[in-house]
Image 1 (cartoon, one colour):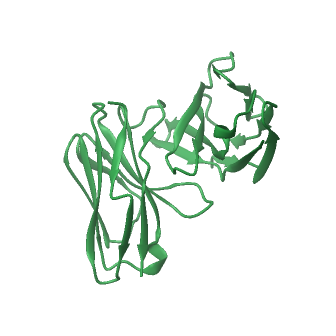
Image 2 (cartoon, helix red, strand yellow):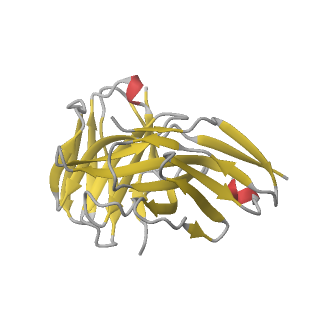
Length: 114
Length: 118
């Protein structure tokens, strides 16, 4: 299995809702990442998990809460989002953090906050 | 600070022709990696090609090859025999471990949208 699988593919949520994005990989990668991508822009790093521990938090607002239950699974919990949080959320993984191997990305979740 | 610049927001190429996408970067590191990623309308970022800075030889993956000019800090992507499926946004990316700070940097350029004309 050489894929990163993200669910759901599309999500529409109200500003008072709580929802979660899910990311899964079975390549044995020990680093997993959340990126946010606005239209026609490059992806922006949000969080990095290395060996199931939070390694990097790029000053992301607390309404985004990451979780890494095990080495294959990465969640992003969403609560009280704003319309400007509407974006494509990409998950990625790599063999380890901090190595120049390149990342394997998922197809993303298109999030719309209404 | 490291930067990655893609000066061509959009490029077009006729099917079966060759196109070159440009990327320049700025760094004070001597050891780093450079990447080209492809993002088609399906949204998934796909690693196209990877170049290690200490390797003189330009990386090649089938129809994709790079022209890596370390002194000029240039890393262009050449796509030969362009196909309709090559139409996508292409991002150049830079990765390096900074010994002074003990951290790494992974920086994406702003992207070039490639259109392939039938």
